[in-house]
Length: 165
Image (tube, rainbow, N blue to C red; front, top):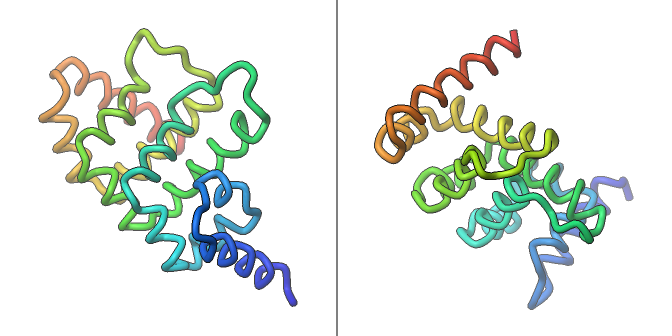
Protein backbone atom coordinates (compact mmCIF):
# COMPACT_ATOMS: atom_id res chain seq x y z
CA UNK A 1 0.00 0.00 0.00
CA UNK A 2 1.17 3.52 -0.68
CA UNK A 3 1.82 5.86 2.23
CA UNK A 4 -1.15 8.07 1.23
CA UNK A 5 -3.53 5.12 1.43
CA UNK A 6 -2.08 4.09 4.79
CA UNK A 7 -2.40 7.68 6.03
CA UNK A 8 -6.01 7.86 4.85
CA UNK A 9 -6.73 4.59 6.62
CA UNK A 10 -5.17 5.92 9.82
CA UNK A 11 -7.34 9.05 9.69
CA UNK A 12 -10.41 6.89 9.02
CA UNK A 13 -9.47 4.62 11.95
CA UNK A 14 -9.45 7.62 14.27
CA UNK A 15 -12.78 8.85 12.88
CA UNK A 16 -14.23 5.34 13.41
CA UNK A 17 -13.46 5.47 17.14
CA UNK A 18 -16.37 6.28 19.41
CA UNK A 19 -14.39 8.88 21.32
CA UNK A 20 -11.47 10.74 19.82
CA UNK A 21 -9.99 14.17 20.21
CA UNK A 22 -9.02 16.94 17.86
CA UNK A 23 -5.44 16.43 19.04
CA UNK A 24 -5.47 12.81 17.83
CA UNK A 25 -6.55 14.04 14.40
CA UNK A 26 -3.98 16.87 14.36
CA UNK A 27 -1.24 14.43 15.31
CA UNK A 28 -1.94 12.23 12.27
CA UNK A 29 0.70 12.64 9.56
CA UNK A 30 -1.71 12.70 6.60
CA UNK A 31 -4.23 15.16 8.04
CA UNK A 32 -3.44 17.96 5.57
CA UNK A 33 -3.54 15.57 2.60
CA UNK A 34 -6.92 14.30 3.77
CA UNK A 35 -8.21 17.86 4.07
CA UNK A 36 -7.00 18.66 0.56
CA UNK A 37 -8.60 15.43 -0.67
CA UNK A 38 -11.86 16.72 0.90
CA UNK A 39 -12.37 13.69 3.14
CA UNK A 40 -16.01 14.34 4.01
CA UNK A 41 -15.97 12.65 7.42
CA UNK A 42 -12.89 14.58 8.44
CA UNK A 43 -14.24 17.88 7.16
CA UNK A 44 -17.59 17.33 8.91
CA UNK A 45 -15.67 16.85 12.15
CA UNK A 46 -13.39 19.85 11.63
CA UNK A 47 -16.19 22.22 10.61
CA UNK A 48 -17.90 21.85 13.97
CA UNK A 49 -17.85 25.09 15.93
CA UNK A 50 -15.98 23.57 18.88
CA UNK A 51 -13.24 22.25 16.59
CA UNK A 52 -12.91 25.57 14.73
CA UNK A 53 -12.62 27.35 18.08
CA UNK A 54 -9.86 25.02 19.25
CA UNK A 55 -8.02 25.36 15.93
CA UNK A 56 -8.15 29.14 16.39
CA UNK A 57 -6.84 28.86 19.93
CA UNK A 58 -3.81 26.94 18.68
CA UNK A 59 -3.10 29.83 16.30
CA UNK A 60 -3.66 32.80 18.61
CA UNK A 61 -2.82 31.60 22.13
CA UNK A 62 0.72 31.12 23.34
CA UNK A 63 1.19 27.60 24.72
CA UNK A 64 1.99 27.11 28.40
CA UNK A 65 5.71 27.11 29.23
CA UNK A 66 5.63 23.41 30.08
CA UNK A 67 3.77 22.40 26.90
CA UNK A 68 4.94 19.53 24.72
CA UNK A 69 6.56 20.28 21.36
CA UNK A 70 3.37 19.14 19.59
CA UNK A 71 1.42 21.90 21.34
CA UNK A 72 4.10 24.49 20.69
CA UNK A 73 4.90 23.74 17.05
CA UNK A 74 2.88 21.00 15.38
CA UNK A 75 -0.69 21.82 16.39
CA UNK A 76 -0.50 25.55 15.54
CA UNK A 77 1.10 24.71 12.18
CA UNK A 78 -1.51 22.06 11.33
CA UNK A 79 -4.36 24.34 12.49
CA UNK A 80 -3.11 27.10 10.20
CA UNK A 81 -2.75 24.66 7.31
CA UNK A 82 -6.32 23.42 7.82
CA UNK A 83 -7.66 26.97 7.52
CA UNK A 84 -5.46 27.76 4.53
CA UNK A 85 -6.62 24.64 2.69
CA UNK A 86 -9.53 26.98 1.93
CA UNK A 87 -12.26 24.47 2.74
CA UNK A 88 -15.39 26.55 2.37
CA UNK A 89 -17.47 24.97 5.16
CA UNK A 90 -14.67 25.40 7.70
CA UNK A 91 -14.10 29.04 6.72
CA UNK A 92 -17.88 29.58 6.73
CA UNK A 93 -18.11 28.32 10.31
CA UNK A 94 -15.49 30.88 11.26
CA UNK A 95 -16.90 33.94 9.47
CA UNK A 96 -20.52 33.16 10.35
CA UNK A 97 -19.82 33.18 14.09
CA UNK A 98 -19.06 36.63 15.47
CA UNK A 99 -17.70 35.07 18.65
CA UNK A 100 -15.16 33.07 16.63
CA UNK A 101 -14.18 36.15 14.65
CA UNK A 102 -13.77 38.05 17.93
CA UNK A 103 -11.51 35.25 19.15
CA UNK A 104 -9.41 35.37 15.98
CA UNK A 105 -8.97 39.14 16.12
CA UNK A 106 -8.29 39.13 19.85
CA UNK A 107 -4.76 38.33 18.66
CA UNK A 108 -4.40 42.02 17.77
CA UNK A 109 -5.24 43.29 21.25
CA UNK A 110 -2.32 45.39 22.52
CA UNK A 111 -2.00 43.60 25.87
CA UNK A 112 -1.32 40.21 24.25
CA UNK A 113 2.12 38.77 23.80
CA UNK A 114 2.84 37.63 20.25
CA UNK A 115 5.43 35.16 19.08
CA UNK A 116 6.65 35.57 15.54
CA UNK A 117 5.49 32.03 14.82
CA UNK A 118 1.89 32.65 15.86
CA UNK A 119 1.86 36.08 14.20
CA UNK A 120 2.73 34.35 10.93
CA UNK A 121 -0.06 31.81 11.36
CA UNK A 122 -2.55 34.53 12.28
CA UNK A 123 -1.54 36.50 9.19
CA UNK A 124 -1.93 33.50 6.90
CA UNK A 125 -5.44 32.81 8.20
CA UNK A 126 -6.51 36.46 7.82
CA UNK A 127 -5.09 36.65 4.30
CA UNK A 128 -6.96 33.43 3.44
CA UNK A 129 -10.18 34.99 4.76
CA UNK A 130 -9.46 38.17 2.86
CA UNK A 131 -9.14 36.18 -0.36
CA UNK A 132 -11.89 33.57 0.13
CA UNK A 133 -14.37 35.29 2.46
CA UNK A 134 -13.82 38.95 1.60
CA UNK A 135 -17.36 40.24 2.13
CA UNK A 136 -18.01 38.56 5.50
CA UNK A 137 -14.55 39.58 6.72
CA UNK A 138 -15.00 43.21 5.72
CA UNK A 139 -18.53 43.25 7.16
CA UNK A 140 -17.16 41.97 10.44
CA UNK A 141 -14.37 44.53 10.57
CA UNK A 142 -16.71 47.41 9.70
CA UNK A 143 -19.47 46.46 12.13
CA UNK A 144 -17.59 44.93 15.05
CA UNK A 145 -14.51 47.06 15.38
CA UNK A 146 -14.04 50.79 15.93
CA UNK A 147 -12.90 52.91 13.01
CA UNK A 148 -9.40 53.14 14.44
CA UNK A 149 -9.09 49.37 14.41
CA UNK A 150 -10.44 49.27 10.88
CA UNK A 151 -7.80 51.73 9.70
CA UNK A 152 -5.00 49.81 11.40
CA UNK A 153 -6.32 46.56 9.95
CA UNK A 154 -6.41 47.93 6.41
CA UNK A 155 -2.91 49.35 6.80
CA UNK A 156 -1.70 45.96 8.04
CA UNK A 157 -3.32 44.18 5.08
CA UNK A 158 -1.71 46.60 2.63
CA UNK A 159 1.69 45.94 4.21
CA UNK A 160 1.19 42.19 3.85
CA UNK A 161 0.08 42.50 0.23
CA UNK A 162 3.07 44.73 -0.56
CA UNK A 163 5.37 42.27 1.18
CA UNK A 164 4.01 39.36 -0.89
CA UNK A 165 4.77 41.19 -4.19
